[in-house]
Image (cartoon, rainbow, N blue to C red; front, side, top):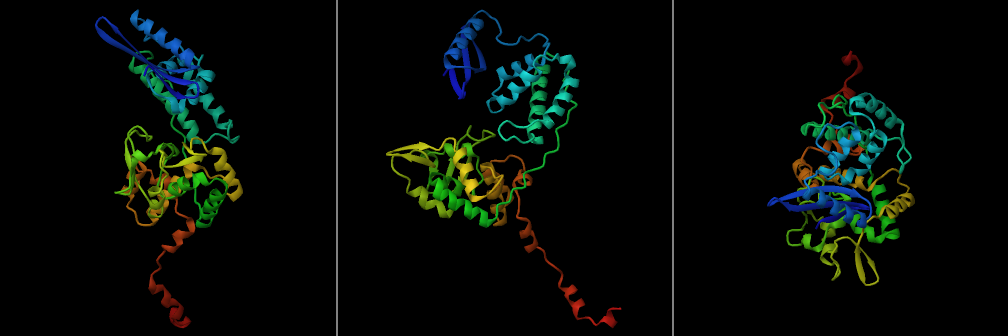
Length: 351
């Protein structure tokens, strides 16, 4: 398809024409309505036929905004489009020659800024995304001869502190009880996510075509994971009955029912937050279920490499997602039995 919807008012345009007996192609992310995207598609095709390069030219870039737009047009950055939009709005008019000093001040401002959704100061991990994308865009511009050097190459990422998320067995059961009562359509998915490390996007896309009841596993297909590689997810013993009794005519493994029709879960943030509020569990995101699932698998004896494979991690992410409950560590302490004899040694002998 020439126009693919990637998000609210966000489209990927794929224009290609035959010119001089050869196919010329141009891809671009476009923000606007579908009608405007169709007009942009026609414009791109005309530019391709006329031999004109769309967007930023390959001549020297004068502003940081030109560099960012050049990168956006040639890469799929839909997940981080808000980050690019903010940098274009805040630093788009900055000359590349002055970017180093202004980017440093920009990072200082980000450190004291608050997120629009949470109202809390931005985390170091969020600020690191700005640094990473700015470096990537400038490196790409250097590769194409648009800039001579990367003025932000000197900026290192800030130290990130992994979320220390520990949900006790009591809190876990209380949350599951509340979800079963207040939002029962979410209960199977949450029970599964508490036992198998998954992303929300993976769970809501799972269909009956991905289900393998014979081998007790679920296929997450290529392109549906963060790193793009397909993986297999196991089915916990206590959930095999659920998957075996899915209603006929329902294509989603986790669904909500409206009258006689079945729909995917989509965005369930409001229901999730309401259940957390009732269960009196603060600061627990759905993504944190990955911490709980990975920790439980390791504590139950699952090899680390197996957990990484199930979660879809190409690198060792257990240093981030493994969060044993602190008090449980005390159960693993083994004292030497010889020190127990000190209690039976007479005081005179001990001296």
